[in-house]
Amino acid sequence: MSDRWTSLRVDEVPSIKVAGDLRWKPIRRTLGIEAFGMNAYTAERAGDDVVERHSEESLRHEEVYVVLAGRATFELDGETLDAPAGTIVFLRDPTVRRYATAAESGTMVLAVGGKPGEAYTPSAWEWYFEAERFRDPLDPEAALRLMDEANERFPDHAGVVYSTACWEALAGRTDDAWATLQRAIELEPKSREWALGDEDLAALHDRLQADG
Image 1 (cartoon, rainbow, N blue to C red):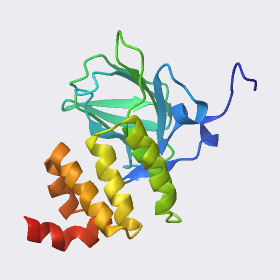
Image 2 (image 1 turned 135 degrees about the horizontal axis):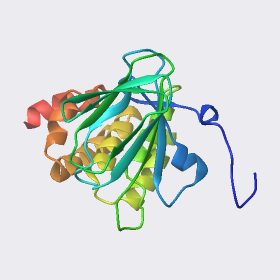
Image 3 (image 1 turned 90 degrees about the vertical axis):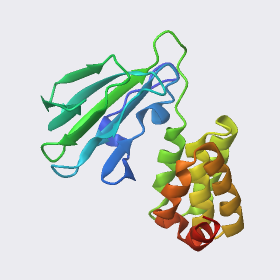
Image 4 (image 1 turned 60 degrees about the horizontal axis):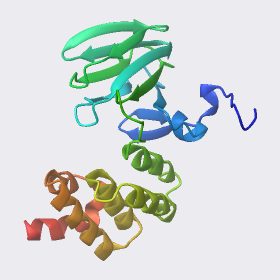
């Protein structure tokens, strides 16, 4: 290892549970990659998610998924693809709805992506995914320090603002969380519906219902 190159094993990057049973390995952040996005997802059990259900329609990213270990089952706009280790899946069309689950325990999928013709910019979701590492043990103040960085880098990003409200509520900063949530709702009206079902924001549920 030197200041010119770095080597590590994917297994050495700690995984973070970020959504349901999705476990994210922040490879880009760990290595400090600035030219393209790169992350890995792992499954402890068959049936666990290894690619969350989404499209790249808003970011316009091309994506490549490489099954490093195990076996994954992809759903691509309703089509099913069996993907054993060694399979490469290239999605040149960002509108394709994609999703993958592990067909075997220990499945690992590497994801690489970026927008054609433009310099790469890290996505805001990386910051609120990274903040999830502070759930166990719970440390909302550490998460909020990370969200301060996200808010500075991505001002008025609805996902960042909403996540900030969640962590403020978990930190007991109820009034701050309420004000931040109102801003999130302004940016993305669906945030109100999400908040009503979000246990992180349980302290605000009565106020939300009264305000509705």
